[in-house]
Length: 138
Image 1: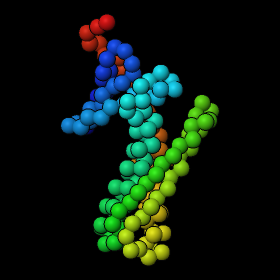
Image 2: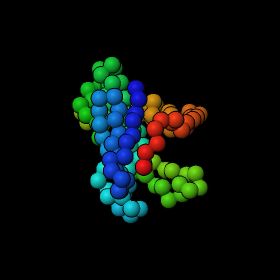
Image 3: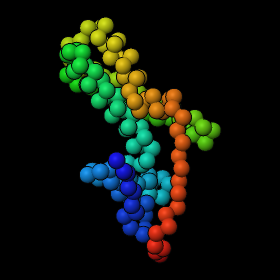
Image 4: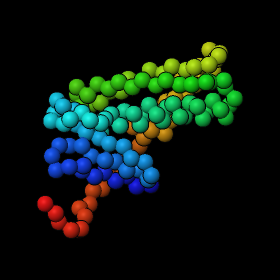
């Protein structure tokens, strides 16, 4: 899988993001010069956590035959201390279906074991950025 991000126009900050056969867009908020025409990269970061928790819960419930009929995950962030290396994510889970307290507790514990949660909290991530030696354009 390759993610390719391309500038949409010379003006503005809107970019297309292609992930295999899927396309989404990103932009900056108006408060910092963008058009707010699409989610920001921070929004996608937060959304990745919410989506992973929802999908993990649905898959787990299906495998364990837990009658979970749906999940709502709300993610809010506090980036007020991001410059100091702190980025807080607050997650609210709503589990749908006729579930026992034990099943709710089990699913709550499973939510924090989703792969993206693990990446965000325990993985040592390395990023190598290389400059393409392709054609120059203005």
